[in-house]
Length: 303
Length: 305
Image (tube, rainbow over all chains, first blue to last red; front, side, top):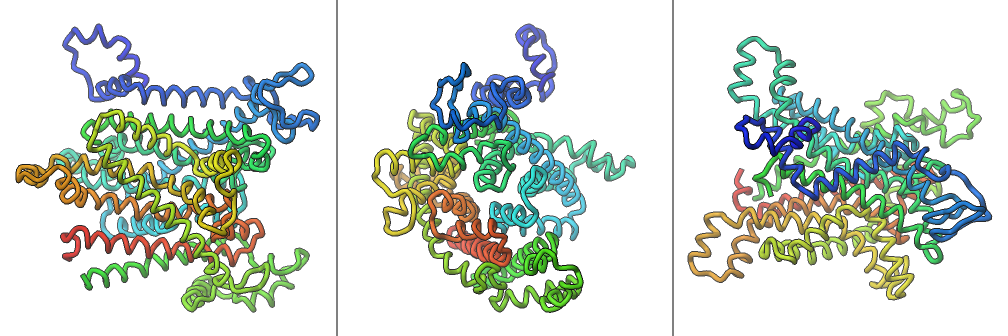
């Protein structure tokens, strides 16, 4: 992307000279011309920056409590300090908590997708290459997992193993590996009989090197699209689990937990039930927009 | 058709076995159940009789077979909280969950498919764009947050509908609408794109060339072919909806399996959690079987072996 971006900047000049462009460059330009996808990428980048710089950006510590300033409305001040989005039931600055909570959502979502993509790609490569009984067994396992209503599985796993950041990531990876495995396997099955793969095999390349050097590059486009869409899904799931009290444990904030806490104050302080939901919606929408844009850029024929 | 049905029923067996294996392992891997039954001060020697009584001293494979045998007879253990059979407690709450899920599904189908059809017919129009923005927004909102917003608007501010509980149809409206948003966006999107897929098919052109009215072509020729991917999504979404019901129930205090299983999780009532997982997974698997059978009705090619 960054190389494409750089080429894009000089694109107008280059366009007048007959330069042979790679496929990657054309895809990159198609993506850059998609305002919705770019808006999505921008929002995600902004949120990632905010999460990374949370200690510097947040006006207060996420657990800075004071009962004297409970449930203040937005723009209120207390002892010379301004609370842009007001305070919560323990007198904590809502904006600061929103900023710190972005760390949980983005980190858990990203690590969950990464783990799911790694496991799923590995399983998919193996299941596609050994398409006899080993492949069948692997894909049956995936089917059985799909036979589970996922959220219930996640709740059961966390109920039995306890809630922690690592269990949260584990549970989210558990959800996403299946989709990656299926797509990669289908892609391996489609590429394996092709001439260039057979040629590589005939010239003495081992299966591992053929898989990694010749087949894997063909699966990267669908994996990228999937990863973006799954990232959106995992953020929603993390929020849901946190809302049910099965995510990150207090006092560290997460958007889902903030919404759960705010429920008790719905009659009097409904604004507390709005901010975290908007944060979730913006993040998920940004990832979905980027995912749609990537899909269109990589596969212009699809609807 | 009978052969097809038989084969699909046989395929249920390994899936159900897999589900029981996962549930069994979850419970065993996570610790010694007798630790929960006996006081915390109990030594391993104290626990030995209890372990023997529950068959925990047997090899894992034997334990699993006994577990499957018990499960097949409908014995999934007793609640650690009040001692009644776990399965009965779960089945008692199942109708409320199914009622909610089906109501949510009906709303999703009733709104999602027409929106998808209209968007496809008027592709690129303002209506299409608004619908697709709506779909994107719907997909990006956490379902439980939608529930909270609906409560805020319709129960707290306007006072049109009750906040929670399950007494009359009015109690069903907000939870059902919330749950429908689990399925509605994807359903509308799938309907639109699968209609656009069949738009240029030869048989559709033939139907138009025959001089059929556009409405007939869409309703009789295109929608039927487009229904197959729609039904697939619907089947998959039903499982998502069942799980989504857990969250929706928790938002609206709906007395179904969802609120029940969450309560069991908080109380560490493992037999109940286990029973609930098995029951919901079974409902899910059977629904997917029904969806597969529905394919056979929609598309005659699938019935032939």
